[in-house]
Every structure is written in structure tokens, then in C-alpha cells.
Image (tube, rainbow, N blue to C red; front, side):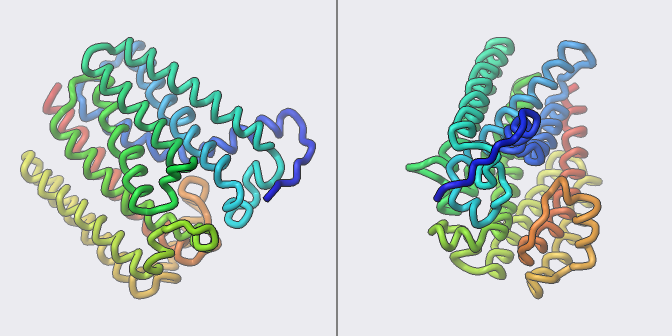
Length: 333
């Protein structure tokens, strides 16, 4: 399947190169990075530490996440012709050759940045950072690229996303400023499973193209309603373990807040399970107007339902993560 190449100006070409890096997705790694830094309890208000924080955000945002998105567009042209025909390559605003150079250059920047930052930090912390960054870049490539193409099977793609967005971000951010805290390992695990649950619901947006292309997303294999059920069980277990950890770490107030967050989630989940297409539809305007540019928009009913749930769930989970990160960080200050 080929695209129609069109002649566009230099500025529009630059915009297309940025668009293929999908800037909206960069935001997804920032909460884990920020919380990992806070939980280390070791960042100081110095120019050096602020510059290091900026470097961390750049290497995991525009470079790391951008690389994975660019590779995804490059290898998913045929699916995007069906699911997202306005993307730069299927729309003809970038050729495949230009897209190849896009992710190749970003990959080189990621490797060089990872080596430099790891050497700058040094020791076991530098080794953890380098291993995390290289793991992220590797998973970002094989997620979309043949022959492995992890995204073809949800049992491979969901863990890859959980590791990339939830585990290595927490560990890297902690290692940037201090030795790995035991609490951070637990929190990274919680983020792994939360990412796992969210990605299997996010596949609603490409269910039609996935079915035609032989992709084994959970929505294709077991249907929307059962996919919601599986994801909701994982999300609820994450909050339950989170509450237990808060209690065991001596943060009783946080435990109660986590349990309240779980209760709110369950109420929303029941409504969505009963009506996967139109449940909690009263919140759709908030998604479109308040968060549409951040969490995305969709024409698929089930995916819009997921976005409505995601808006509430992610805010609650983030608030709890910020609180626990501050409390853990204070413990080590």
C-alpha cells in the first residue's frame, strides 16, 4: 500500500517531523519521572540538579517516547491508512525514507545521551540509568518493528508498555539522584500493572484495523465488555495493593485516600461495564474540552468510554503517587 506524496513547504515538513514524534505522548512519562525524583529525596535546588532534571525529561520525552512513536508510524503504515489516515506518512506529508531518518537520528541522540548521562552519574546508579534507557529504546523498537513486532499480541505488548512507561521511568528518576529506594521498586511495579491495564483498553481505538491486520489485541480476542472487565480487575488490584503499602509504610491517611479513590473507580467501572459504549457519557464534554488534546480523541464509542474512565482514574492515581512520593522522599531527606 502506498501513500500519495505531496509537495509541502519547509515549515510544514518540520511540523510533520515533530508530529511523527507525537508530542502528546511525551507527557505520559513525566508523572513517573517527577515522582521518582521526589521519592529519592535527594534532589537539591541547584542549577546542576535542575539541568539534570531537564535532561531526564528530554531523554525520556522527545527522545525516548518520540523514538517509539516514530518507529510505530514507520512500520504501521498499512494500519494507519485504515485507523489514522491523517498521520504524516499515510497523508503524504512525510515519505517513508524521511520517516526512517527521523527515528534513526532520534535513536542516535538517545544512545549518545544515555552514555553521557550514565558516565556523568557513574557507579551503580549510572549503570541502572544506562540499562533502563537502553531497555526503553530496545522495547520501543521491537514493539512495532518486525520480526518480533510485540504489538501483534497483547500478551507481549502490554508488558512492554508497562516496563517502558512505568518501571524504567521510576528507576531512572530515582537513580538520577540517589540509590534505589525499596519503596520505589514497589511503586514501579504498581505503575507496570496500571500501564498494562490501560494499554489493553487503549487498543479499542484500532480494533477494526487490528482485526483486519491480524493483531491479537484483547478487544479483538474477547470483545469490548470482557476487555473492560479484565482491565478493571487489574486496576482495582493495583489500588488495593497501593492501600496496603501505604498502611505498611506508616502512611494511614494516604491509605484511606487510596481506598476512597478505589471506591470512585469502582462506581465508574460498574457504569462502563453495564454500558461499554455510552457509560458515564456526561463526562464526554470534559474529555473533549478539558483534556482532549492531552489524552486524545476518538470516533470509537468504546475508546471514548475508556478515555472518560482514564481521565478520572489517571488523576486519582497521579494524586496518590505524588503524595506517596513526597512522603517517601521526606523519609530519606
